[in-house]
Length: 526
Image 1 (cartoon, rainbow, N blue to C red):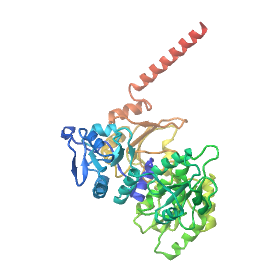
Image 2: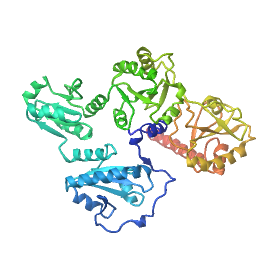
Image 3: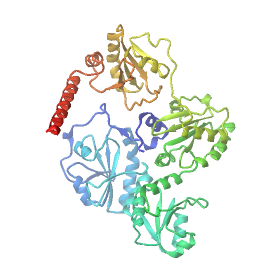
Image 4: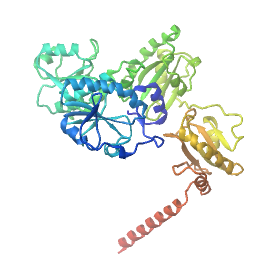
């Protein structure tokens, strides 16, 4: 995931920092493409190849395994990655002449950026065997060890073959997250699927076993995949009798079982939390330095087994530098300990309102959310006393419905973020628009801080986001995406949510459709 909805992206950017990159926006400067290098010579900086459109093919031809970072010089995430990337490049260069790490300044090499669909920074892509079109996105951790580990996996076999009991015992005891696929027939079609799954998971080590002695050693009687998580937990995944091994289902099985029933958020666990692809997260907010709150973890752990694979149980220490997470859920330190439930797909949040946190109340809360019996928790600021004093009205969650969906009013709303530079640029224009319509009986110009207020059924994916709610009982909503000027805003409002020229276009299209339908009818009659 890599995860797509703004509000939870805001959460993840603070809550799960390590997984994030920088998206390209219109406020980010680019360099002049004329600054590109003109040689196909392969130069390097700190053991990292410096590529451009003239030497890219040469790099592919020279090195069998090539990881390329597309970066922007001003990108903070790229700057953070740089020392880890150069150290990993040095390690891999020493290990083999066939592998190199490289980088492309995507703000200069715009042709390469377009070709490889670079939409954010840094973007890392892996090329193997000189194949320019068969590249894959880097899926490992953005750490020195993560980069090295991921590349070594791509250079070697995805899975080793175990020949005897001794090699199998050594494999399960020495490898990190060992997974063995037991297949009686070495030519089984499922083995290809197993290899494909192994290619996707650098956090596991994979092996194959065909030997009867190995089946007997591990008590296996039929084809199966076993994840040797620890001495006590060895979850199994069996191929479907009719359909065979399913790569996606095997991947899901591994991701779910790699996570503990209860996980404390940390930089080390964040990747696994999101990789599990389980959309439901139950978050316990506690202060670990308070013994009375720490004991609640036992209730939390006891409640978790019934929801394995359905809900991820994560606890967050309020002293761990996660103040912005508390803020996202509208919580203060005085509200702790407490629970919040969030579904990542719908971005719906639910508040725990039981008087005590116990195993039973936690389970009841989880079942209630899953069964649709718990009301969604929507964050809202308090309504300012002077919310309608100025030409631009101030909306919050608690008065949005009443104002925006007033059947007698045409309401134009700016959804903004206090930190957004584009919103700040728009502010004087929006104030001018408000001044123009302040005495208009049926038009309201308004704004709402979308980072502090949530509206049921309305998602804001970027800022500023402009929505028009025309008068009438239909509860329509029209998103404005054109140029942000008072003149165009006014034309848009005065035409009821249609820009000049758009209505004529719609009328023409409708007329063409009508004529086409009449022609079809005429041909049928003939």
